[in-house]
Image 1: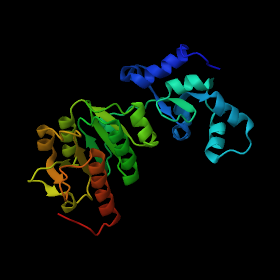
Image 2: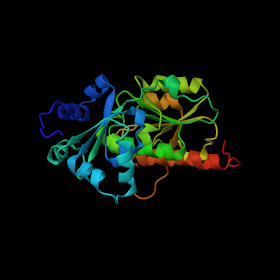
Image 3: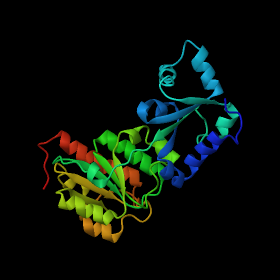
Image 4: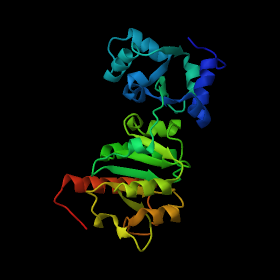
Length: 277
């Protein structure tokens, strides 16, 4: 059992949690919580760390909630180490630690790999998105809305930031995504491949989001929380959409706006007879 904060494994976990560079070098990331442990593909879990308290419960208690029974079974399939409760609390990234941390192998995709050849594929492209909660929510919503993949500019927040990982609620394991050096060039590649791209803006020249037809292959381009999209990304996208708002609101949260657009596409696709030119 690990009982010292200076233990090399504890330092390793902290390094992966705090430093994007370490995550890139090791090709691994930290996923905290029972749900994130259970949903991680078993073959991708490098190792797990459980608190002494949770380990004792899993070992000796017969009447356990289903998620803990599943946790006990999964620990039989992956390497794990027991960590003292106080040490675990110090390395945890949450206010109320659930008692398990997973070290998971990263998945790497290229732009070509995430672009689907289907005629009605759906994408979200993100430029300069900075808030971990926004990115995690977009990933979670994208999965629920049937998006095929998420494409991020190099300046977006790190997908493997612990706060992003946690807020994806497991979608990070299932939703293909990739980072590109130049969002404008990626948009051009998509358009040349027959994908219609729509820049989310507040421009008066844009059309309301529900006036377009999203049955063909579609990509929504979402910008920075405070500054929106760059002019280059807007111009390269070709089409612009806006979300009508009442009252004094000037803009919507980036993840909220992305969710509205994704679900409009999903709604139209559930009703093939709906078509807007």
